[in-house]
Image (cartoon, rainbow, N blue to C red; front, side, top):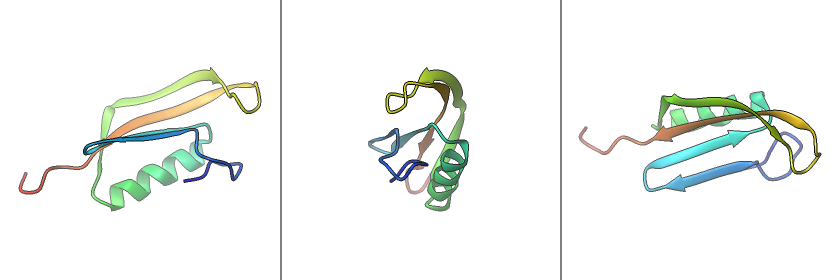
Length: 76
């Protein structure tokens, strides 16, 4: 997964059937979420956040978009 600038994405973590997506770029964020939803993941909308943080690559204060997605267990 790459970020908007072609470098590594800011943060993507997988824990069992849960994925946390965090991106500096809103377009990249929404594209990644849509890609995961096509794979069967369900966005946990209550976890959606936009936070002002300092981008460690640029030193600029920017908005970070984040959300958790979960893959339902088979048969549920």
